[in-house]
Image 1 (tube, rainbow, N blue to C red):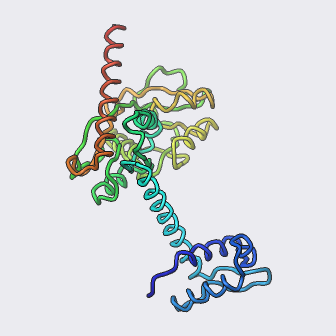
Image 2 (cartoon, rainbow, N blue to C red; image 1 turned 60 degrees about the vertical axis):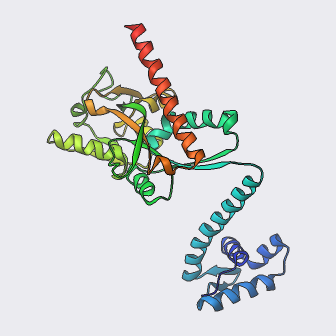
Image 3 (cartoon, one colour; image 1 turned 120 degrees about the vertical axis):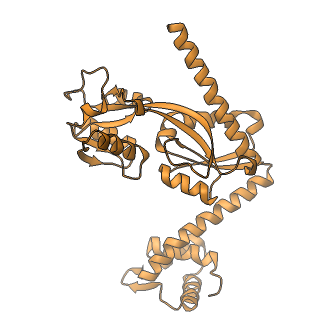
Amino acid sequence: MKDLDLKTLRLLVAVCEHQNIARVAEQEHIEPSAISKRIAQMEAVLGTPLLTRVRRGVQPTAAGLALVEHARTVLFTMERLQNDLAALSRGVTGHVRLLATASAIAESLLDDVAAFMREPEHRNIKVDIEERFSQDLVRTLREGSSSVGVCWDGTDLSGLQRRAYRQDRLALAVHPQHPLVGQRELRFEQTLDHEHVGLPPSAAVHQQLQRAAASLGRTITYRVIVSNFDSAFRVVAANLGVSVIPIQVSATYEQMLGIRSIPLTDPWAERNFAICFRDCQALQPAAQRMVDYLECRASDRSQRKHLEQSRAG
């Protein structure tokens, strides 16, 4: 197969989105016949029709839809490549792709990364943050597709190096009228008589809760499965169930939705997060700087917390 032309791919995506060649031609300031010719040449190369004509324009065929899906990914990648090269020409000295779990992002990671980027010596470092489930995050790091990740250290991190990051504690989010709302703290076992709002099975917290329930000889009854913490809080606010969430994430939702959070006292409810990577020596300088900064910032906060606790005692 000959190399596919990027400009034709871009035009094909636009035609499929608008379902009209004349409209795309007007936007691109070219003749409709030029677009038709390009797409016809691509169809000849691929050996299959990509568009069918209908009364008011065109529609993609099954092959056209498949190609457009891949074309969007290719065009996005090329756009990022061009932006990165342009940034390098302006003096950007590094680009870090950071993977993180929803818990890490929702709690303190974004603040830490923002503080890192505000440092004058880091002004030429770009950062991409992508949310991933723990298992997917670890697999991506092992494959070398990304350099740094932040996730719960209860995940299987074999084959990776790690540094300590932060801690959090799990709590139960409940509606203000829920029977458990008067409790100051709870054991996880006490929640199992009530319907839960859960995250997908691939989420680390889901697997953790399943193991905890199994160790008690119990099961969790899920009323709803949602994709993220924001959705879980909103379902709890509708009084459709309770949800186990990081207590550090709940403050905003308590104010916004009026829900309550009750800390869990089980030992496993206090979780540690780790900064992980394949090989510290192989990290690019920008990634190494970020790892060192995140570790140092977490350590400073931990020391301040212990000092405040000792003063309070």
